[in-house]
Length: 325
Image (cartoon, rainbow, N blue to C red; front, side, top):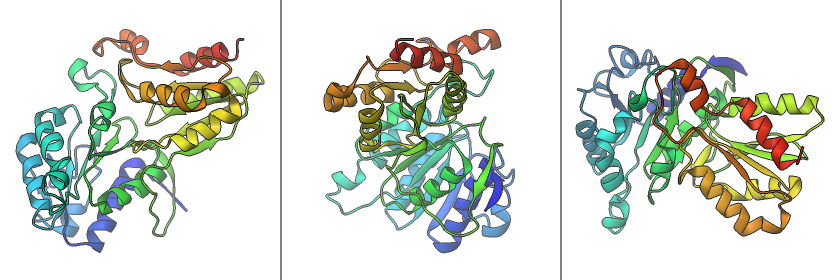
């Protein structure tokens, strides 16, 4: 095992796959000459050249459409958005073309494409640069949506995404690119759609994904000191959603708290709540609690932003609520 940063795990995954398959290429703003806005493509231009690591204009609709069209001629593009907030400019290509090509062509065309970049808040970036769109894309049939929380998962899942014959949304975080973690020296791929129990527990299940799961770990540590055992599940993939892992845990702990960095209306935690009450209602000893951001655009003020975002204290309170403590 070696210890590398999240950005290095992303770079390794892309580079290893591009060495394996010449039909794979990377395109996006600043991915080549600048080595990526967050240095996630560092050194790739030197290795693969300007025909496979392509700097684009600031035109997400244009280069997303080019990438989707290129899949019909046998290519497997990786499209980097500097932030998924900018993906809204190209969302027509993602939703109306990438996600629907296989069905609308009667299976004549596949669309093996990965759209990747950071999601969610990243400090004082304001209301238009601090949004989480996981549930938007997960609402679309034809798309897979992956949100890893550490370097190991990021590399294994990105390799799986690149090899997938359908479009995959791969969502990262500006605040995780410097995170370090252990990654195997050799080849490995993590299957899409499989959640992982990161910590075993007996009293309550906490489900989360992406960078916000760190607050779940912090809360679980604090609660353990108070004699409350938390089982923490990292979804890793939000579409397809691994309900089996969640249901198995809930049937053991009989309580569920869901932590998600997203607005509270109609999100991933809403769907999980519905699925659990529909499939495991008799196992619940307390109502499900979901923890989200405030139902407003993200503020710029750091004081207000801290109030807007969920945190470990919110998780502790939620766990104690379902434990009736």
